[in-house]
Length: 287
Image (tube, rainbow, N blue to C red; front, side, top):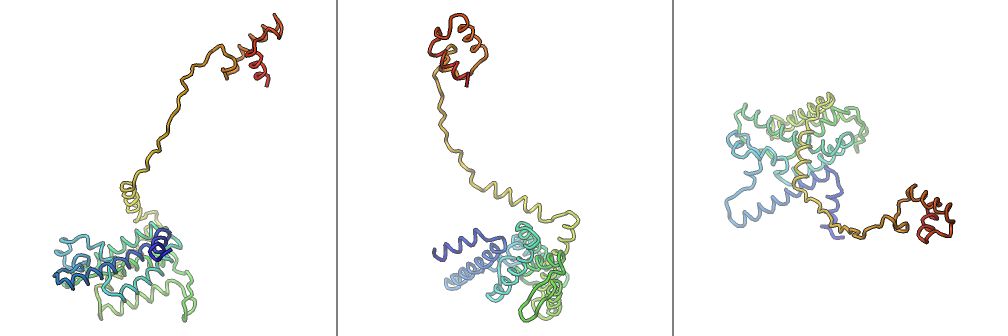
């Protein structure tokens, strides 16, 4: 099996976390190749402008799809590596308690919520910037798991055993410290994703699953675009031969009336007067 077949197998057999990892890495590689080709060709076009989320409300309404696409693209290789590692960690923890459909729903909705938080806060601050990265969506997964199982024990190399809420507290504290220093939009998006993760679990514990409508929509979408299985052709054979009502050998229904008629014939003329068909019928009836 070559490496391409191995990747395909891992993608098909892996869960939602693995698929999200493939999507983020694959889109980054594709975007990098496109960027290189565009630079060498001298075309004045940047794909980044069409996938990154802008805090400028006018630009956002011109490209509304960016509220989704920014969650799957990254600004650089180190940005990607860090998010991929945290996604793997947070996604596995989330899958301990919840399904793949819920994981994808929280990732997508948490990312949208983090993007809206970024736009709102930058609108209030009067700043304009672009945002890419899965950090807000990943933060939603992490905080959702922490809210549901805060005392889950983790063994971290060189640190030891800690509770899950300790990890979340450290991550949020680092975001808070770095907020005024650099990448303010990214850190605000982290807080937006964290808030969604917390709200999701609070509502879920009250019986409201915010990811359910999305799961239903995706299931119907898959049903619509999935190829319908073809009904296999079945050749039906019809037996056109007419059955004779008086033919005991061909008639499979052993009626009591026929048996009575044969017994009357025996009582009147003896067994030897029966035809071959009548004897065979009587023999089968006796069984």
